[in-house]
Image (cartoon, rainbow, N blue to C red):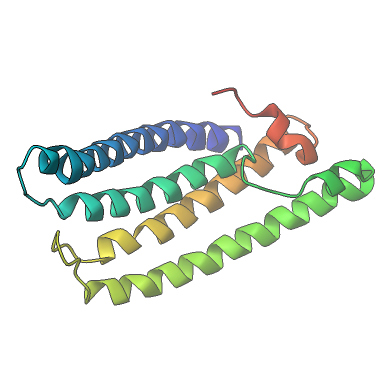
Length: 175
């Protein structure tokens, strides 16, 4: 189990690097869009760059899904924890593990929905970039697999280290 947690953490380092690169792409695409729309237009140069909007949108989709997958690893997703934290450990801990299992099942459901979207995406192309939307829709099933793997790693880590899973977000490494 410890090897699994270590491998997932190494995978998350790579995914975090990808998310950082995607953030840079989004920032550059939006900067280009602003320059073309406002700065160049103010200088009397009327050109358009419609690709910047699509690139930023599709990159942002991948960035959010992958970033959320990494967030799951350290229980950094939005959750209503105050109730579970107030319960006695005998009740709260099994409840939190049960919620984690339900969450994993939900990620599995979203994976299957994402696979269905891939079929739809094969027949759609983006209007400006001309890529099949399958490349965009792939973000959902890929990220759901990562979320499942990260959820299992979180469960394994709390068991291995004997920590109370209700407070898992308190033990997340600092950014």
